[in-house]
Image (cartoon, rainbow, N blue to C red; front, side, top):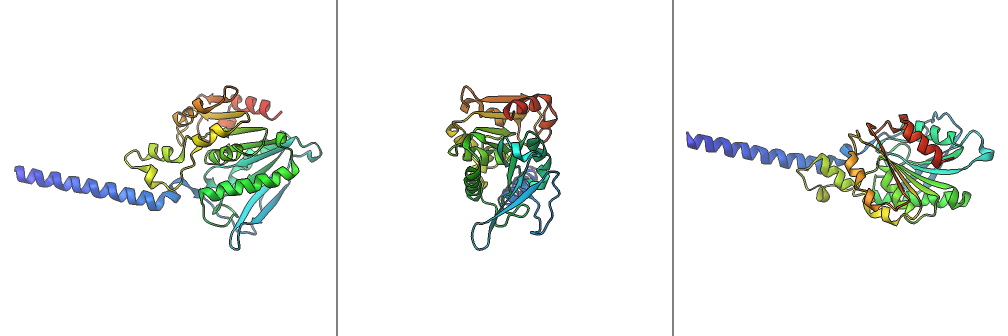
Length: 272
């Protein structure tokens, strides 16, 4: 009886080890599909934005193209400035059209960068490529707008890209919506049994970039965020300057902060 029990225990342990290793291997090979949800668009796809827009395509090399969309306010003659917008991990620029509508309604021009492998942007998704594309977009923006009229805005995945850029690029302010401490820390929260720091290819260490930002920073995060738990964003608080603002939206989730009066009132003051 004891021998049979031991065999069962050994069998169960082996099964657990196999499952653990199997999930770990899957996490390594499938991490792009787990953490990224891109939706590609054909080069000839016709955008259906509510406002006037222009597409921007810049060759990165012989095979890859950086893509962005410029969206304009109704009164272009009295444009208040520019918002460089770095979106989240879902689909492509079209998924964030509502955000562009809100920002242009304040009288700002909005430039949305597409990520490699998303929408019309070609190439392979790569952390350093995102940083370099953001730098290239800013360089173009600085030719048209003065630094004190450029706002850098990051959403979810894009918060690290926005923060890295704001750490050295002259601008008016940095706005972060649903940020995270780092991608590896966030992955660890979803897969606590695995050494995600070694497995995950993308680090996006926002916590390293934030102390380099000298301009005013405003952070929005909801307490009911199931994608990036509130506690991950809260870890950024000690890294903020005394004049920076961390706005907690009670019961706000990952995708609905714009539905809250607190978010809109603060955005009014930031973009007035």
